Amino acid sequence: MAAHFGRLRKGATTTAVAAVAVAALSASQAPGVTTDDLGRQSAGSAQPSGDANTGGEGGGATGDSPYYTDLPPLKSPNPSPSASPTTGTTVSVGDGEAGIPATVLDAYKKAEAELRASKPGCNLPWQLLAAIGKVESGQARGGRVDASGTMYSPILGPKLDGNGFALIADTDNGAYDGDPAYDRAVGPMQFIPSTWEWAGRDGNSDGKKDPNNVYDAALAAGHYLCRFDRDLSVQSQMNAAILNYNNSTEYLNTVLSWLEYYRKGTHEVPDGTGTLPSHSSNSDPASPSPSTPATPSTPSTPSTPSTPKPGGGGSTSPTPKPPAPTSPAPSPTPPTPTQTVDHLEDADTGKLTATAGSAFGAKVAVRAESKASKGVAKVRVRFTIIGDTDATFTGGESVATVVTGSAGTATAPALVAGEKTGDFTVRATVVGRVLGGLDYTATVTPRQADTLTRTGDTPLTCVPGGEFADQVELKATYKGAVAGKVAATATLIKSADDPTENDKGPYFKDADGKTIRTLTDLTTDADGVLKLPKLYADDATGTFLLRVNTTGGAVLTVELKVAAAAS
Image (tube, rainbow, N blue to C red; front, side, top):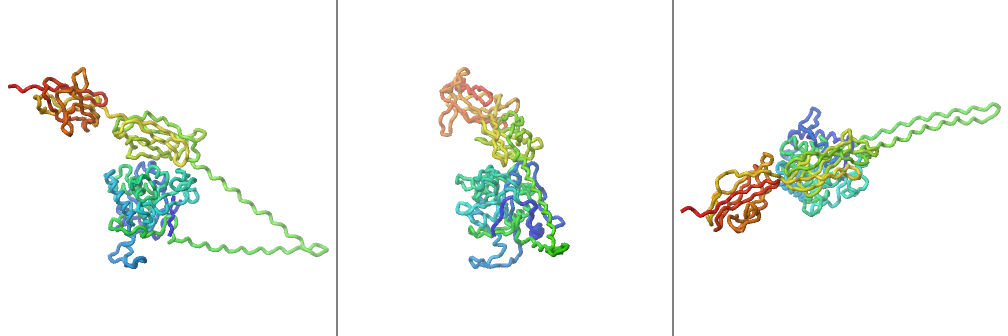
């Protein structure tokens, strides 16, 4: 049966059958989920603070799209067998439901491996991706994908045109969903285009980010779930991640049930042979609407007998009925707040500068305004970090969406500088409108030190042709505080007045054992300590100088003495 995808119809719920099944499964298949006295499940922890305004467009990744409500079968020691229509082999219902198409299963496991390397603290299980994939698209329509993981035919939700669904005007010029007028949820993990634009990933290394490719979609879903430094091994944080993906408690319960089911065991089935669910949260064939009884007909009013005219036959014409009153024309639908936005204005954003590894002191703030320059509330503003930088917003993301307040102002989360120095851009745009955005330049400066000192005071001496017994160790500080991860250079110079590299005297050795007298790419450790490699002496004797410089202007000159041993 064809699935229906897109944004959830207002008031849509799962069937009573599903609700009862959820209650039955709650103890064994939904860890961390409790059941109320009506048999409905409720999450122990709903959405975390801040998620509502930093997720996708209102409904997280999917726009709160409809989803499959089929629940996993109840486990039993002897599940009733049935014959496979294709092979004739007897299989159990449970075994069939547990099967995941080969390419789809591989995509989930590859996404888990990538997240284990890039975000090890998230503890993402691939079974969670499988549970979401089952609920969102029936495992990519039962695995109808090619060898690279791309759907043979795209999965598209209905137009989000306000007709039974929320209104989301086009945000991608039809690039992902083929619709230049309205957005649709796209692909096996049902991302809306405005979310895919920043959350999309290239999961199969083909150079593209395709929401209809299961490798790309699974990896994007994994990164989406792992936002805000979540640890999915903590049940409350997993619940929050699932709710942020699709904000529905029934959705949470259904996903948790499939997660527990897949954790108990699953297996690979050929692509295209996966079991397709049949019930959707906005259209459930199991609960057909009762037919409307026919309206009884109104008995006709008997005609008024004619009144004979005096003095002759014939009858008078009946009195004509007055015309039926006409219904007033429906009032036009008022524009949404987003539709009234004319432009964005800066809202006193401060100077965006920070030292590598530290937080920026100022935040980007904008104001959504109408043509009359009045602030517009309840408008989603997207802040995007652009450029060659590893700076992020608090939580580790490069994109954040914030809803404007009563004055029309939206303030981005705090920026945190990475290790890459230089300029990058923060762009603010209105979600759901094609309007010019605002660009802000942010600058990351190198870590600095203003003072260098030796950690010891032992004289550094050596005999000609020998090696120095002690290595040079220094400590860097900046304004009295430890200066960790500061870049430094060490050079054996000719004299205090001539900082060029010496051609005789003490030297270092490179990896091949060759003589070098300048060391670059040095960095202090987290405690501000810099320990130089071992020093050697050639046949020249005398007092020589080693000069160390750091970013920020700290300089230290160290004396090295080479003299023959006393008789």
